[in-house]
Length: 162
Image 1 (spheres, rainbow, N blue to C red):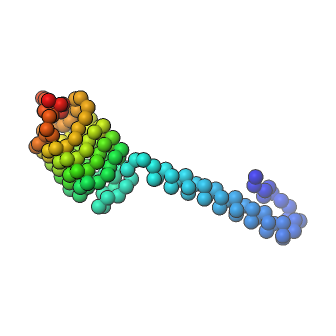
Image 2 (cartoon, one colour; image 1 turned 180 degrees about the horizontal axis):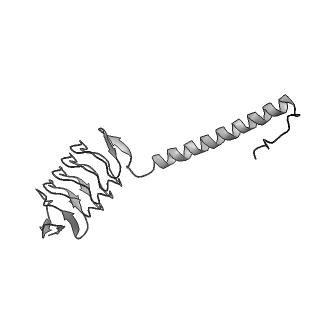
Image 3 (spheres, rainbow, N blue to C red; image 1 turned 180 degrees about the vertical axis):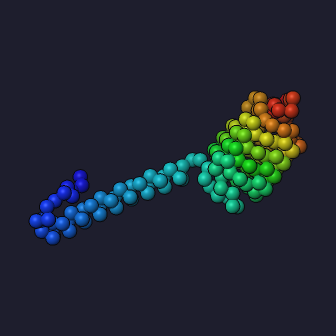
């Protein structure tokens, strides 16, 4: 409990000093606790907010041509991100949110895309050779240059297992 700051000036200097010290300790404790909570939140399971090769991996990220080869992007929220021409060879994007992301011409060969949200992702010219996909129908935009083995493109906007 914080001491009452509305104290008459008739209190001794020692009492006022003790009161200031108690307030300072209480403020320091609150800041320490808050800092710990922020550290826990930032280091949670999601990779969003991580910077790899100058690319800040957040929703709406602007990282055309980024080199993210072999990156662990498990659970990253990259919805609406511009990753056109990015190198994502062998990257782990399992559980990532690529909803509405621009992956035009991106290299996704051998990328792990199991459980990844690709709704309205632009895969025009993207290379998905040997990429690991899961799920039924994936509604995408554009025509990938290369599809993973066992997948076909229907009506130029639906990717599904053959």
